[in-house]
Amino acid sequence: MQSILFVCLGNICRSPLADGIANKIARENDLELYIDSAGTSAFHKGEPPCENSQKVAQKYGIDISALKSRPIVPKDLEEFDIVVTMDEQNKKDLLSYGFKKVYKLGEFGGLGNADIPDPYYYKGFKGFELVYEMIEKGVKDLLDKVENAKLDKK
Ligand code: 4NP
Image 1 (cartoon, rainbow, N blue to C red):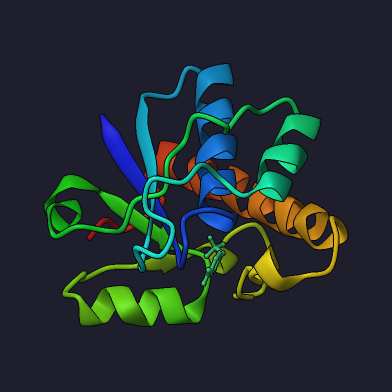
Image 2 (cartoon, rainbow, N blue to C red):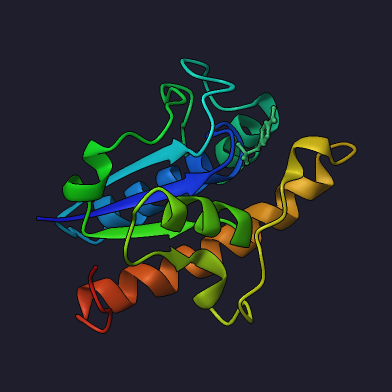
């Protein structure tokens, strides 16, 4: 079974959405994938996804309320076939921790290599809607490429 780890800074806003969306697509399409998410920081360790991420996921029929934030750990280096970050800083951080091959979600889904902006400090819900749409585009294309073996593994 192939495995994918989504990474952002806090693992409470963006990567839990990517995790939930990827799990839903995998379930609906009978894809054999192990999916998880983590943060480059431990700021929110043990916390569920932020309220607005839960809310926007719910709107699209995805329940991410049971996820718990965790920081990346050295074991992730061996454990995951594919590691995908939300922004350039996350990617730099992982490379500096010794990860060899790290993708950024913005490389997929026609996102033009854009960073998925951190919605944590946005005012209101709109930022989360925009971020959800970006993440969904990227994740759909990523999973399509994974399934069709169009991706270099680390
Ligand atoms: P995330 O958002 O990286 O998308 O989970 C953040 C949430 C909280 C913080 C940073 C990013 N924080 O520093 O508290």
